[in-house]
Image 1 (cartoon, one colour):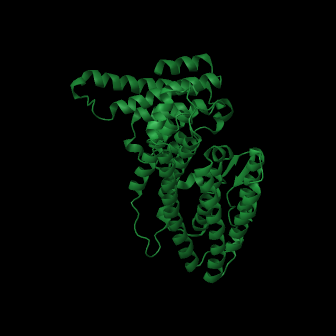
Image 2 (cartoon, rainbow, N blue to C red):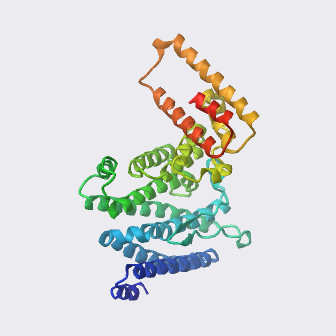
Image 3 (spheres, helix red, strand yellow):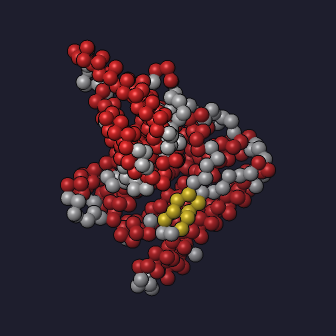
Length: 401
């Protein structure tokens, strides 16, 4: 079907018609794959699962090859049509989600307390006026997975991670080579010369690198499930560090977007780091011009308590409480009480610094924390103005900042 449509595309002069056909085809492939996933859930033998999965692999590979070809040969069109988004969601993301749902619902292999916030969630992406939805959760009536099914899904998910990481890392490198400079150097040129129009290939590369970060984050969230047979012990901390590093580098590319900050906030929340989660969410809100409409849902992904509340920094803890109170629309009396709590711990910290100035280690991460506090309070000041928290609250936040 794709070959026929590719031939038809050559006869079209209108890029808009080209875009419509490509998007329509991708949606049709997505519908077909979701149908096959539903059939896959009903299989009762390994042979039946392998047969359906073989068909799924063929369609995924064909779509991947065509999308990759468009990205390399027509980057401007690929960027406009969001071809890389179809590639990510239909070829890899939906498949990973299908595996995750089967294992998460029926296989108590690991205590996923750090991922409990995503349990039962439904995720979808919107572009070009359409919705590309992830596969739906299997119902309880489909029964508990047997041993061979758990093994099949576990190995399939691990293989998907390796395949997706290898593909997107290679695709990113190839796109960067076409720019004839390093990706970070290209981003720096854009910052220094904002009037210069950047190439479409660079915008695609930015999103592709985000997918790499997403894959590391999913591994951090789901690999503890994959302890079946030959799948060995996973170094979760190393994967977490890789995800964090990739997102941090992607942030240098995404100079005009808050999505990477949101992903870093999620990663910090899964790691039970309240302060970092709030910091990155506040950074992401700096890019959002509809904060007033989103305030009730703000910071809901931040863990209610730190992973180790006994050792949590009192300044960080009090600032987090203040941020959550302001963005969740708590009454002014509660906000002002939290303001005084923050002010007290800040003054205590400042007094300690004055009395022990020689012991202050400026080479440590002290200034990093101070920077994070400044960003959080500055963003909170803007947010309080947008959501009309009241003049007194804004003045108090400004005082802290």
